[in-house]
Length: 222
Length: 64
Image 1 (spheres, each protein chain N blue to C red):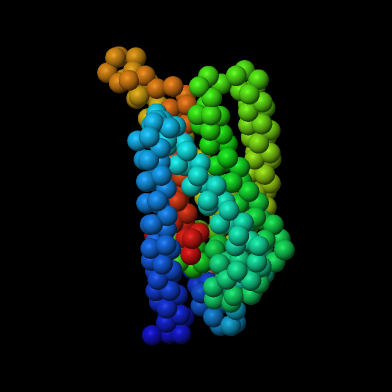
Image 2: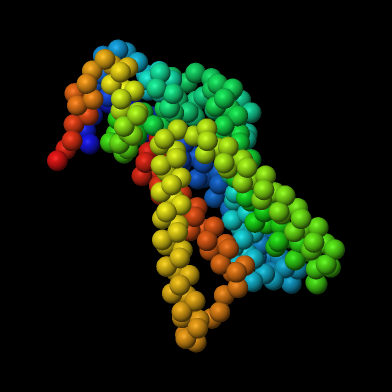
């Protein structure tokens, strides 16, 4: 057995232990959040439709993920350990900026996902002024996030761009196929009609799942 | 596609991060290349060949 393979095995078991620890730590938090949501429903404070519930959960998940990434980026040493567990040298300023930008992109996506649900939940009927203000805010966040996404693309290396391209292509194939079949089923009276808002959290969930799959397949998580 | 990147790197006692820095890519890209999860673009393959001072075909071999 070579030193490299010994290190590789030790590193992999270390990753498994860390995954287990994170899982054990996250499970009670997930349980408490779910119980809180369930409690709101029981007390009649919030009785959301499934797309609203799904959008809220996805939004909170992305905000949490974004904050987690930003927290790691706050320390160059911590980010360095994530990027290069073998060497463990501190991350460069460019790396910190790049990954922090990824964190902000995730955070903004989560905020944008939650905002329509939060605003429509806060008011029985959303006043036009509030709705317009929320919409202007969403457009501003969307433009900012798009600019940051383009910046991330420009500064990514070829593997990252390949992964992003694969995620985009797979999402297009899966979602346009699913959208056509559902729309056809609806038109034929076989399936319930979905609104665009119903489709948004489904689209985001599929995007995240495909994103995790491609990241794992291309070894980006290693 | 198979490659000898890990061997060439080990011969020079370089870490994945060292090689990534020399090629101006991420360490994850080097890891994906070494584990066969990703085949490099032609420009990157030429860059790798220049860095190790060897022809591309001695570093990368088609499995077919």
